[in-house]
Image 1 (tube, rainbow, N blue to C red):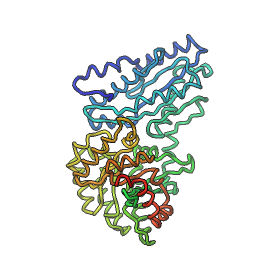
Image 2 (tube, helix red, strand yellow; image 1 turned 90 degrees about the horizontal axis):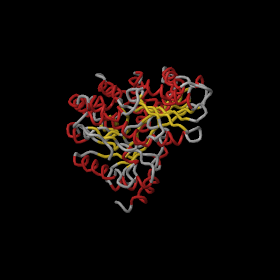
Image 3 (cartoon, rainbow, N blue to C red; image 1 turned 120 degrees about the vertical axis):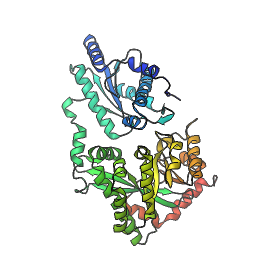
Image 4 (cartoon, rainbow, N blue to C red; image 1 turned 90 degrees about the vertical axis):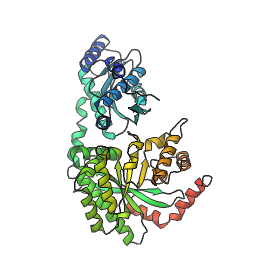
Length: 447
């Protein structure tokens, strides 16, 4: 596996020194454009998503080592004629002579492949992603500075999509407004305008019986149209709107549970994601208690999904807060489990009920030398602690077969069911036997 280890700092940083600085890169690019004004050239800019998480969890030396590993992979990928640079803290750029409009997308997507392998720092694995943007030259005599700005604008749009993504900017610069500003402006008042709604994704057991559902917030902006969920939530966290939105989601999901049961449906528990800012808020436990009382549902009908990064800052305080929530009867699950930190370091210290295996492991589970042993290890470890294991992001029959072989307790993903309206979920609850029969037919060889 590609990765870096901590013993000596100087050697892993050598790849960084092989890249030109921002000013040097721009000057070299301008010189190349002046010397060969008719030759096509693709300019790519990329930066890392959630890079600060490494610094926050493991310190700045770990962040430096991670950047060095990214630079090393970048240098290995570079064609011989490329001009490359590190133009910001976690921002890189490359100029690819001879690549025009037709070949530019393939070049950008092949560069994105350097993030497929997890990155190891201080014996912890991180699945980094990157937003990547590109533009092409010749483009009406534009300078290197303008071309870089175009590629950076495209990169910013890619980052708003979330995950590893590529965008491009091939038109006039004025046609690309600051997307982040537009999103932030549109987000203000979105709740009051009724633009945020909930969808519910089912979670089923090994026999295909519905055992829960995850509430997912969707934002359909009157100005911008549907906004990708990861982008929506990240923007809400950055602007501080997540506290209001998170409380609304929690209250709406609990109220929906009460409505289903009042209509005669045996609705299982609902899982709600909790942002780091919510969990750290001093009044969070009181908010949960108040919502349970006002909606009239028991705490055992609610599961709160909390990410690893939300709890690692202060494990003792996190454990106390989780214990207070469990006193209300609420279940606690760790979301995105196994990404970015060793689970052995903290699992035994927290009052938990379930872990959700991150979808990045599920995507790799069918590959040769893939993640099946990792998923199986997580399951064994969790079961030893008396915890349920949820496999999220299951999208194919082969993935379903392997997560069941790994003895995961619950399965969630598009193969089981898309995020659906409360009405559609009522249809599923009204005819559970069809889902069960379908699941049994698939898994008869395993159980």
